[in-house]
Length: 256
Image (cartoon, rainbow, N blue to C red; front, side, top):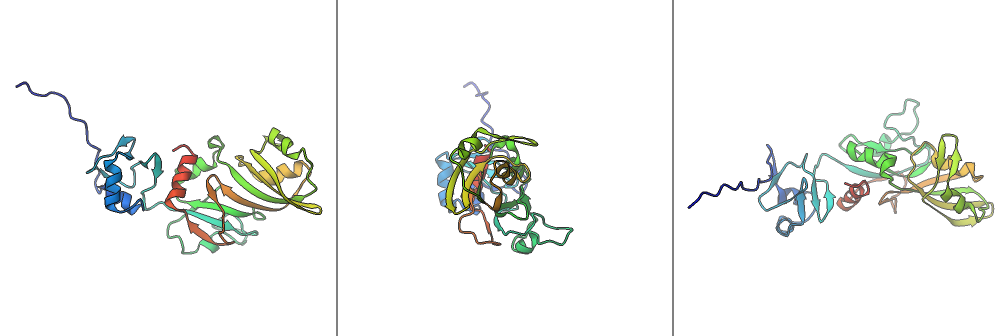
């Protein structure tokens, strides 16, 4: 009988301190270990681009794991937090001018040191994301990934009918053109109007500068969403951990 010289398929690489894949999935909240084993058996889990199999071990700190095509964050050292930033608070963990800062609201509720993803000026309020995942934070902020941010703005009215068309077409500012991805009037009350606009720009004070340029200065500005994450019912000054599904949605938003 001739020997079989075919090379066997390589198993998934193992690392010192690696854990069984189903244990890592269960710890990340996917389901019970038995349910996670079933996902692996049904070939619904990939590790570093390879279809996983029962018995695989992974390093949670480095493995890139997808379940049904969605990225799963299994590194328990990484945290993802949403905050409803109040008006008058600067987007900083340590303000040298003595103003109200983010650290006052986070306190010891998050053990890891986190950083804000982008900024909101002191006079603006609403959704702010904080994380210690530098790679994801960079992608969320970089304009090439085109992650939409949505704002609710109170402005001086009345709003002309052609304003939406003008904003969608683009407006020239001193540092270059900017255009919105969507715009609508939510409500009007006398000489004040409430409008909602979405854009993927991240330049400083971009929403305020844009609306002032078209003759409707902002009197109040609230960011209501960043990509798939919404402010929802989160109360002013409160924080919450993002769910596994929300973290996966953020990864999807930046094409990971």
